[in-house]
Length: 244
Image 1: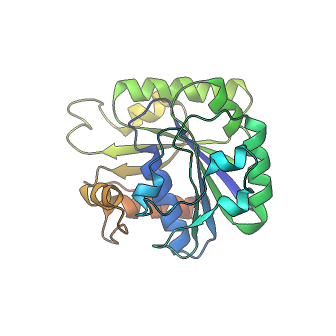
Image 2 (image 1 turned 30 degrees about the vertical axis):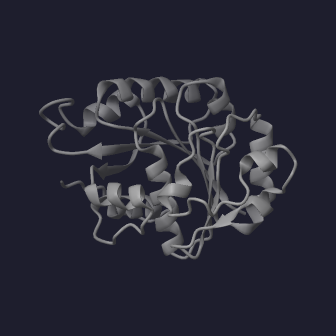
């Protein structure tokens, strides 16, 4: 049965969807059957990141309307044999947390990991959906607005009794750590109040790959950091390192 991992953030622009793409790509390359479910309705982008624009026959909207089963709407990602994608619809579509739960339940037996790419924002819709996940990855960048929003989101999860949270700090560079925005990474961890699982450097190679729908190059520093996160998800001891 698949382990469900929800990736979320308090505001847009944190690179949440790019992280989902990287996590799915890294897990698939390790041989794990992995599915990404995209919930950013009206703002879908993962088909572009994986070079699948124009190749998605069905999306989550078809499933929610009852026209297709979840299994029928899942698309194979060409650049990674073990990776599949269930795209968000291009238009806003009403959805309930229970429907996402049913979709995940119907697909669990086919995959080892299901990654849920939530819509950004602090609202009850997001909280209700991610509460059914085995683990919640909260994404923040090293700026005070993102840090505060991540803290507010984490507090609400704790208030709802959900302690299965880990923090990913994304888009990190030495230009902002210790100089412009925050004193150090510990400041971010303390303010958000979640145990850290990974630090992802700002990486032009990752930006180019996901922006053009090409495979992420193996020498991408961001991919190396994401690969380490996936190993920690699997229970391996991988030391936290950061250089940029």
